[in-house]
Image 1 (cartoon, rainbow, N blue to C red):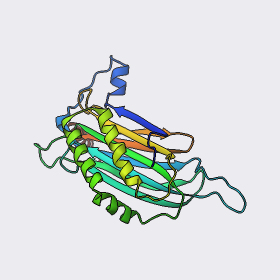
Image 2: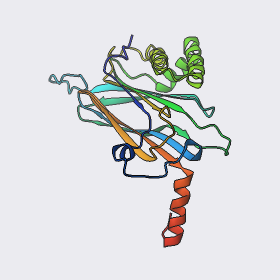
Image 3: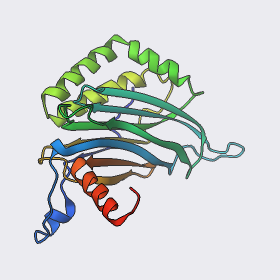
Length: 247
């Protein structure tokens, strides 16, 4: 059984405007959540620092690694998304070819619900046998009754509460269901990240792209969130029209 609490890093990001809180002399019109025109969370720059595989001649010390990702949000566009990737012959210092959107939201109309919380789970797990067909594993997990039950509970919880510890616990339990279908793997992941983006401090104030690097002695990865607001985009378009520059 995989112990996702080992090498686990967590963070709750509440979208506080850094320069605004650091320097109260600076004033700026901070947009409210109602003016948001899009949110995107992206995973990138995954590096395996130490694959935990010794180089003993004639063996080159290469590893096989799975990447599990889960994205949970309180919007109807897709409350939970799940993905799995496998990587062969991974050496120390290798960068995995991953640059993907884990969560994306755009309003369908002006009455569309805005996500108040989005939770991202990522885990890098060393495989001790040949990599299995990841599409088959994903289907097996989705067909599992316990996986279905946990998905339903998590969807309900994230829409009705902001209890981060309960959401984290259920997410780790859900990842554990996936883990049992992986075959023979290390019981301790190289790195596990649980990142929460919420509006508990108010609105989604930190607009633009904001990145966070998570790292331990085995691996590192970047999670970035891009927040767009209609007010700022309209201002940029207006300024570009006045200056003659292209948007």
